[in-house]
Length: 113
Length: 113
Image 1 (spheres, one colour):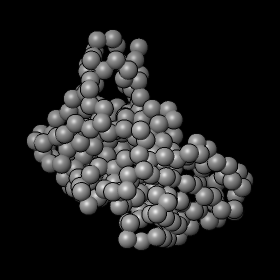
Image 2 (cartoon, helix red, strand yellow):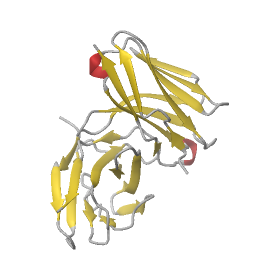
Image 3 (cartoon, chains in turn blue, purple):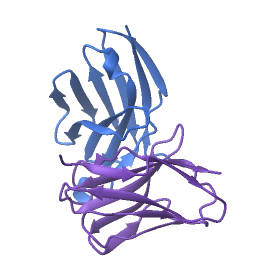
Image 4 (spheres, one colour):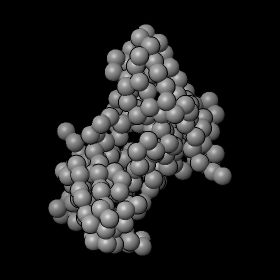
């Protein structure tokens, strides 16, 4: 049973528009969330995090929103650039309990010029 | 230049053979992790280590073994007991276990001959 789900395997967006990547989780104990970006044949690189005490965190073009009641988070990329084309993973942990991160299956984003 | 180095980038295993994947970090992180990535799936945790001379099984430890004799090094051995070893293997480290952002190496792709 997947605790972290990314229901869209792929997403295509026009350059300059907004990309919205979604992530749902089932474990209500999760209190810390990360987004990673991964290019082919490379390791994931950390993008942005959010703690459950917040509902929004922003870093440049990247904003993560957390809706605890819906157990849903989303990553917004504005404006999208061709270099953003990659696979995006969300990860969740019950940090308060010292648990390891659980990763979603990823969403492949293609930003079209 | 700090980071995590995985070697080799590509590895081939024959039937009945054990192979070892190398992971070295110079970030002075206490915790290290091994993940496996299969197509369409998220990262699955194989083993993790919170501190030197200590390691714990993750979700899919069967057929794998690890050691943590030095803080900087966390090699993974894929044994002949692992019947489906073809995958992309990722090593990561964090300041401490479960609490912090994980930083990843570039990965090793293992294939069976």
